[in-house]
Length: 311
Image 1 (spheres, rainbow, N blue to C red):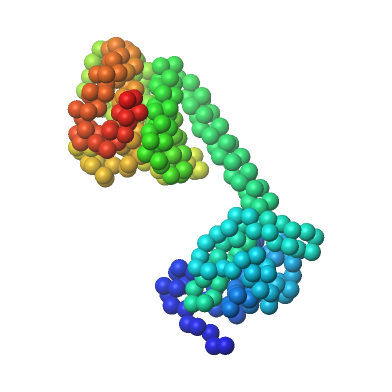
Image 2 (image 1 turned 120 degrees about the vertical axis):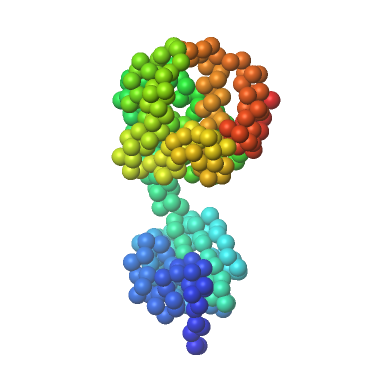
């Protein structure tokens, strides 16, 4: 059978884009960590990758077998199944099956659940270690007043609840929570007497405090595992929706959305907490302030979602 040409668009969309034709499969994917296959007319025509290691099946024994015989179902369109039984020489293993049909040809891959579970466990351990590192950062910066530590904890809680309300994707939720934990790290370079001052700050002191976003990013840039989103939050959480914030006077949607979210949480907690220069504002007045600043200091949509948490 003559090979069908693969257009650049098809190659871009294909699940295994680096292979243009099935005839190249065996050599190109021989060392692939997953079990890979190509099927035409509901029969496996090519198999390569880790069939032997993962399922004790020689790729040569896979070729020619029916798709339904091997997977218990026909493969149409594109999709995935999480618990497909694959019978090997030493027993049946459950695997995740991913496939895509194009021009009558199906390409797919299999990965056992045991492998996936181990990978998930490893990722969870890495995430836990990274969170512990971040908490070590905060503890190492022990010069922070206990009031500031409580502020960070409350802002993190508000941010988590707001992330739930706005149904953020997992990666954004994590970045927002880490951003909440770390947003004021740069204040550790601000003299304590300035942060604890009971009266109004001088013009020079205000300029000093307003440098804390850049200082925070400078410190955190050494933690290479931090997502770029976290650094963006730390740098821009004092920008205002109307463009009058700092340090870059960004306006509207030019401000990262997660930073716009943190700004509402940060200001609300600042208003409702005792500070050296004033007493805490009642919740009702703080909510009224958020309403007043919709579209000015804050993104209106985010204000509405945040206020709804207290209704």
